[in-house]
Length: 204
Ligand code: GRF
Picture 1: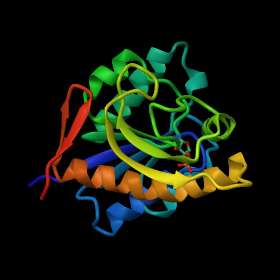
Picture 2: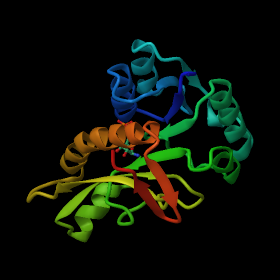
Picture 3: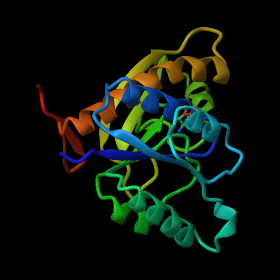
Picture 4: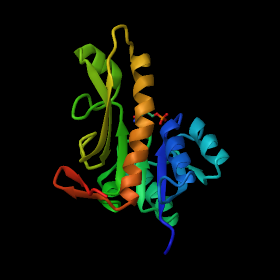
């Protein structure tokens, strides 16, 4: 059987990327991380990926005239690496319809809130300002709307008295690494089916 592959897109630190790469190296995900691509050439995550033996590419969005031209370059690189699934892990670019149509139901994102609450940026501050008592993270398929696609896995985190955005983000991040690994593991166990906006998870 031919080896299955996934690609990871990052813009910065890359801790979720590292969680996925290490889970795959441990054999918890039945696929190989074939390439890590950053739109920022100086993203610290690129070295972390290379240090774990994963091929890396920097494709700088500033070198392209439009979002779609940049996306065409990224899609071409992903296709060259034969990836079946694209994992966005702190990738700070909106995807064009061209990109989303190139990988239907095969792009996954992680977001540090319990969607549909608090999409977008400054997510933990949004949660604190709203006064929620529980937050968490969401792994979801990506569609053409921001942070809105079908939900695969969510994990909750209590908001504690005295939390600020950083302390809440740090506690959520621990759960993100678990949730993302679980979602990608389920994908490569072929246990996910998208029905409208609902993701069905086949029981083993
Ligand atoms: C994470 O909080 C993720 O949910 C959000 O951006 C952050 C990226 O962190 N989309 P890292 O680069 O994975 O460490």
